[in-house]
Amino acid sequence: MRRADVLISGGGMVGLPLGLALAQGGLKTVIADAAPPAKVLEPNFDGRVSALAYASVRMLRALGVWEGLAPHAQPIREILVTDGQVGKPASPFSLHFDAGEVGAESLGHIAENRHIRAALYRAVEIAPNLELMAPAVVTSVAMKEGRAVARLKDGEEISAALVIAADGRDSSLRTQMGVQIIGWSYPQTGIVATVEHEKPHNGVAYEHFLPSGPFAILPMTGNRSSLVWTEAKTKAPGLLALDEEGFHAELAQRFGAHLGKIKAAGPRWSYPLSFHIARDFVRPRFALAGDCAHGIHPIAGQGLNLGLKDAAALAEVLLDAGRLGRDIGALDTLKRYERWRRFDSFALAVSTDALNRLFSNDIAPLRHLRDLGLGIVDSIAPARRFFMRHAGGDIGKLPRLMKGEAA
Ligand SMILES: Cc1cc2nc3c(=O)[nH]c(=O)nc-3n(C[C@H](O)[C@H](O)[C@H](O)COP(=O)(O)OP(=O)(O)OC[C@H]3O[C@@H](n4cnc5c(N)ncnc54)[C@H](O)[C@@H]3O)c2cc1C
Image 1: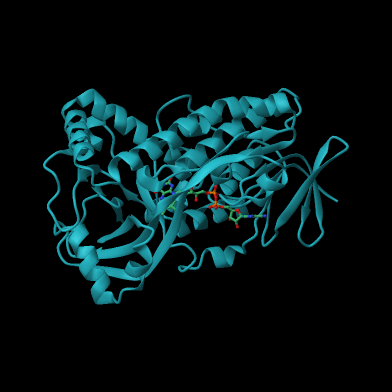
Image 2: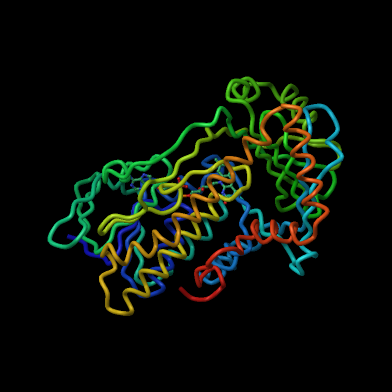
C-alpha cells in the first residue's frame, strides 16, 4: 500500500497549491485528481478567468508558481462599479477604486484558469515530496489503525495521516464522510465569454449591476476582456443559443461603447450558480478545503481567493503541528484550521449572497438605496480603501504564505 503524510483528493486550483505548500514544508504528499492534466489544459476545458487578489498573488509567488503565470496575467489598475438597466446609460452614482490610491501597482490580477493550472502543474512537476496521480478517482476513505486509508476507483489504496477533500462543489468524499452542507441554487446562470475590443482597457475592470445580475468586464492580456454575465436562469439558454449576430446585439446593449468595436471570440460558456457552506470543515484525519467547503456567488470574484486562503491556512497549521512533532491528523490540530477558516468563509459567503440579492433586481426603492450606497462609499476615502483591502484579500488573520513568506 502506498503511504503518504497527506493525501489530497482533487488537484484543482486549490488542491494543487495546497499540495505544493505541504510538500515544500517537508510533508510527503500525494494529490489524486479525476481528470488527466492534458485534458484540463485544453482550451475548451474551462473558459473562465480568475480575479486573483494580491494576497493570492503573494502566495503563488512564495510557492514559485507566479513566475510562470505572470506573463499571462493582467494587472487590475482600476475597478469601476455602476448600476443600471439593459440598453440604458448607467446611473450617475458609481464607485471607483484606483490602485494608486493605496500606493499599489495593481488591485490584483486577472488570469485565465487554464494558465493558472498550467503554471501549477509545472511547479508540481519539479516539487520534491509531491506526487500527482491523474487520472485517479478517490471513491472512499476509511479509518484503519490510526490512519486514513483512501480507496481509488481502480482498487488501489493509499494510507495517510490525513486526507483532504479539495474535490469541488459536488464533492463525493464530503458526502461519503457524512459532512452536511447548508446551501441553495440561485435562479441565475453565469455566462462566460471572451470579447475582443478595438481600444485598450488600460487595466480597468467594470462591474455593471443589471436587474438580472452583475455584468462584469474583466481585463485580460492584450485587447481582450472576459465577461462574467449573470443572467436569469430562464433567459440564459436562449442567449447561449443565439447566432453570432443575435448574441452580439444582446452583448452590445450591456457592454457599452467605451472600448470601441467589440467581437465575442471563442465559445460561450455557462455555469449554474449556487451557494453552500459545510457545517464542519474537519473530522478526525479528514479536512475540507476550497469549493468542497464553500461555494459562493461569483459577484465579487472571491471563490478561488477564499480557497487559496484555506490552502495557505491549512498548510500552516499542519506544518506547525508537524514541526512540533504533533499528529497532523488529530482533531485538535485540525480544529485550529476550522476555527481560522470557517467564520471567515461564512462571513464572505453571506456578504456575497446579500450583495447579489441587493443588486440583482429592478425594485425602485432598492435601486435608490444602492445608488445612494455607491455614492456614499465613493465619497469617503477610508471606506474606498477598506473595500480595496477587502478585494485584495488583505483582511483578517493572513497565513504566512499570503504575506509572501514560506509556509
Ligand atoms: C462563472 C464563475 C466565475 C468565477 N470567477 C472567479 C474569480 O474571478 N475569482 C475567484 O477567486 N473565483 C472565481 N470563481 C470561483 C472559482 O472558480 C472556484 O472557487 C475554484 O475553481 C474552486 O477550486 P477548487 O479546486 O476548490 O475546485 P474545482 O475547481 O472544482 O476542482 C476540483 C477538482 O477535484 C477533482 N475531483 C472531483 N472529484 C474527485 C474525486 N472523487 N477524486 C479525485 N479528484 C476529484 C476534479 O477533477 C477537479 O480537478 C468563479 C466561479 C464561477 C462559476
